[in-house]
Length: 220
Length: 220
Image (cartoon, rainbow over all chains, first blue to last red; front, side, top):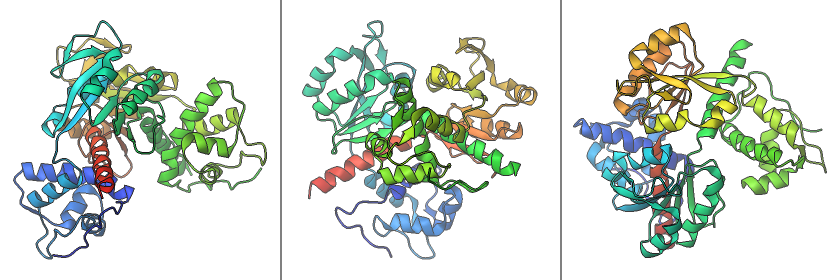
């Protein structure tokens, strides 16, 4: 076995963090297919990373690979799960039961992997009481009261932009440290709160930019 | 005026590309509020970038800032729009009319900014003919025939994972060069096709990882 262990408290580079979920998804597929072993070259080809990059990424977390053998899929998957903090239950609350909120609430994968949406809130009185993904939709006016009684790990914001900061402030006030933001708002949070954004417009604009750039380059 | 012009064909670093939509969103807000001028220091504070980074980013596209004056918001916004390829109409087709597809189809902003979803396809016979965002939902069996008659700029995949590659292959065969992928699938495309992914699970896993890392670090 080779590799360096990660020192406690040493931050992992953002680039590596960004690739971890990709490893997780691919290793899950291999495991589901009953594959036992995988080499860094095979991982690299499947994921479009270099084998050297893969060895470097994985070495951040200790030593798994063996020369001439590769990685044991089940062990590596288990390690990646642990690194990702997936070996525990996460409780989530969701604010906003529109189309995006409904899509999130009905994603089976989340619950299967221990990310459990325990309550859904919306401002629309017509939606209150509807059952979605096993949760009755509650009035957002009860959000703070709910969270003070039942602390949650992650708050999901799937509201229109104008409501997002207000919801975020309630989350922060109630001690939530992780916010998953689907609104286009740029949220203002204290330093100890982590925000992960899904900005649909940014993603579409990046695509448009790359298309535009490609056309311009191929035009000259 | 200061700054370097971008050479034709010179690729813009991914980090800069990733920040452009953030500039766009913020400048749009300033313009909507009637703000005329903004300094790199103000931009930096609002967006949590350093002023030096902002000057460096914007210099990629020519010279706009003036010492002691800052940037003209309307001009800068116009330039960012042009760089992003937003000064033209984009035609989009969407495959998958589930919750995610519906959310995408009902996003007013896209149409307002010239990203027009012209057709929606689904495999579910119960959905065919329903109107969504002004489009009648068509059977996915007609996708290829449609695209061969009406070439589109961007194909959106909002299907379950198992259907994604097949839809992608039809897009590619019909000459689509930009794919916006909401499925968890890792798509296989030729080199000249650009894929922009929205992987919900990856995003949630990054959040879980950062929460876990924070807890471990604060625990020691």
